[in-house]
Length: 63
Image (cartoon, rainbow, N blue to C red):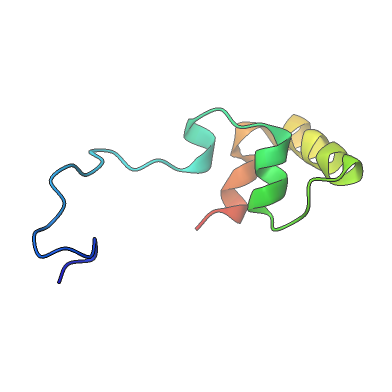
């Protein structure tokens, strides 16, 4: 059995792998990636982090 749970491998696989900062994300995405609940204070923290570090701020929270 393959990792997709079937006898045959998946025919359509992504041709490119993406990390978090290659695509747009919002403060709520950053909060969730960091394992926090999206509260007003955590959303403000995410806004500040994005402003300070730019789009790559989410990289440290993704595998």
